[in-house]
Every structure is written in C-alpha cells, then in structure tokens.
Image 1 (cartoon, rainbow, N blue to C red):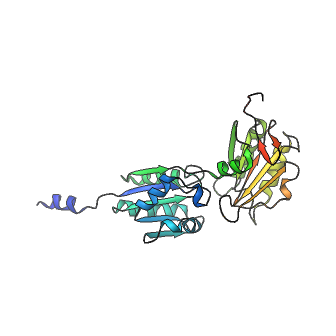
Image 2 (cartoon, rainbow, N blue to C red):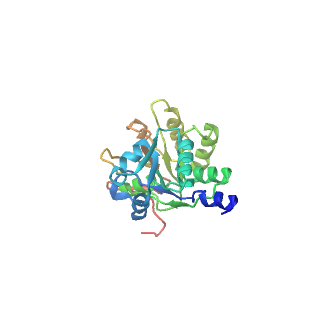
Image 3 (tube, rainbow, N blue to C red):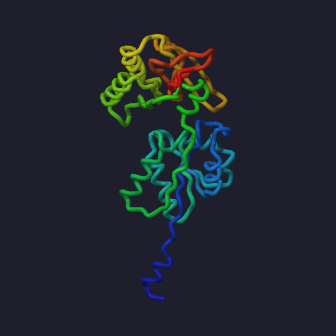
Length: 256
C-alpha cells in the first residue's frame, strides 16, 4: 500500500451530528424523532440543565456539559466528536432553530470547512408550548423576540419591539427578565402600551413542561407585577385577542 493510500485509509470517517430540540422540558413534549436521535448517539452535548432534563436517555453515553454563555465552545466540541467518527446529539431546549444551536453549529462547520453530516431535529418551541397552555393566542400572525441584549444591541431590540407593536402582531417575548436585567421588560411593556389598550390579554409561562411549571393570566396594565424570570415566556395579545374564561384566544377571522 502506498504512503498516500495508507494515510487515506487511516483517516477516520466522519460521524454524524444531530442538532436536537428536546421541547420545553418534560418527556411528554419530546418528539419521537428527538428521542430516537439521542438514543442513536454515542455522545450527547448540551447546557448542563438540558442534559439533566434528558437523563433518562443518556445513560452509558459520553456527555459534554457546559454552562450558559459557552454555546460556541459546546458546538465546537460536538463537531470535533462527529469529525472523529462518532454519532453526536447536540441538544437545545424547545426548537434548535429558535434561539437554539442550529444556526451557530452550521456557521461554525461552514467556517471550518468541515464535511460532517448535520441533521436538524425540530422540537416543540417554548412559545408553542405556552400557547397550548393558554388556549390559542398565536392563531393569527405573531412575532417572537428575545429581550436578551447579550448578542443583539438593545437599540436594535427596541426598534423591533416598536415595529411589532405598531403592526398589531401578537408577540411572544423570550428571556424577558433576570435578576440583573429588569428594565428591558418594563420598556417593552411601555412600547406596547402606546399601541394597545391596557386590557390587552397577556399570558406568562415559567418552566413550561417541567414540575415547576407556572401559568398566569393578566393584561398589559398589570402583568409586570407578576413573577417573571429568564425561564419565562410572555405572550402579549393584539387588538383582537380576548379572554374566553381561563383561556386566551386570538381569532383567526372566521366571524364566529
């Protein structure tokens, strides 16, 4: 065997990378495809808390756990394992293409010129899970916005909030408030209040799909007084959104 052929023979075959959405938290809201992908994988990578949520699927597997703000490191480690020939699941809460790892891992792989098969496995988004608990607030056009300004400047977020509020779109707010970051949600509420009445229905879901789940109903004038944290999602209705008993509904326009 020539030296060139020997080097080619010894080069490890690329494995496979699944980028998996595990849903909002609980096993009941995982998709069958997500569970299958994790079971097929030799290595599972994710934020520490997310790996705890899927502990029933990862026994005997290599685990790569990192803390928050270390997303890029996590993606690179997962890609390295897949490049070495292993089958890897990189997990995100909710859907990996909605504030998850899908975009970042594709960008890193492209920038590094990696030829690793990557499959994106969708999951139940936090907004979708909360909407189901509330009733049907996302029945018509809506937008999702993150209030975290770690990656996007607050001025940009503020402009998007103003555009969504003026367009009369229902809005799902991710990362609404933390211990150190409180003014953003207050400012967002003020922006929406300029375009919508204070009676506009608002729903808050915290830790949806887990044992700590909390679902609260309020309105634009009063929701800021409720417990809202980083694990919360806030859905603000539009001009047609209404309360029906203990549910929130945005009519599609059927004229019922």
